[in-house]
Image (cartoon, rainbow, N blue to C red; front, side, top):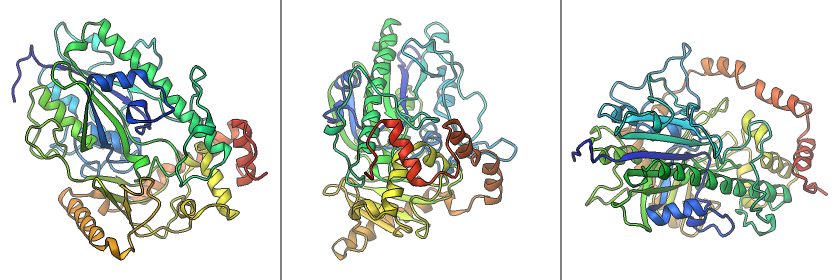
Length: 480
């Protein structure tokens, strides 16, 4: 494919943090997202899109390069070398670098408010270092008639680091009593209020998306700009973010290409977020490298992906290795450390996830159902297999069911082949001495610092910590 400079479209990514498809156009009955819904009506809504990792830095490292984070050494969350320099492999580059070489202006901004001035350098969070990832922060900084590739980073729907809460939406409050909780959560007021604030924060995000699109229109650029809207990984809830269930991986993905994509289209093909890079390159008339692992989702005559893959490795100070492969109907998960609990210690989750503490307390008291208890146990199975058609919440592990033996063997083999073909670097252990030194200085104080800010003792008992959370949310104590 070749395009003249005059005909090449602008490309805009609107990237939301920690967002599952919990929006109106994906069928959520309570969430009001008129701007995102309108974008879907004007373009293509992909119903089966997935991140390659359930946490930001490896996921962003992947979808900015079109390569699996496990193939390029970017799989551990917040990876840095001792000297602060960790280059990409010689044959791997960012999408922004590919497009810059053909004349595109590249920008990346954190969009803090609806009235943002687009001067704050946007979040990258790459697990590697790169020189001149972007040219600026605002497409308005480009030369006259120069095509642009812009990223607009929206920190919604990330939890507040210090309070552990989402931002509620007083204009459109959601009744916690009407929320349908997944079966892996116990039904308590704290969970309903926390989940409700997450949903309300999506509505706040929607207004920001509307403001970004309005700015594009005011600049007279909407008709020649392809807009991508997607989440960087799944929702920031217990058993979702940092885990390979769909709650940690499935994201909304909408593309609007005026005069090219048919309005109101729903595309049900399996899509990995690394597919966005080669798709954008072809739009700009640039042929993706043969070795690129992403696929052009608009390629004519293609059958699309039959499966998607994802990986979880170290997150902050918590060392783990999990891999999964997902077809339309089944998901296979491999846990490389089955002797470790899912809920092994992590300062970030303990500080910021109120439901984490609730599950911990209810587990100790024996008040969880079997579906809830499996996540809170001292160990986990080496293999998990879920029938997503009949068990979308992924709570009935079929890995030991003889009726699914063939499906288990097929997906097990598929994952083995992917690990070998893509050169999964998780096969080699990270330098744990270096990791221990790094997080002794950086991550361990998080618990002490945040508890001090809250006026709480670092030796607080789980039950007292639960009472603190319930007081903050203004809900009855779960054990009364």
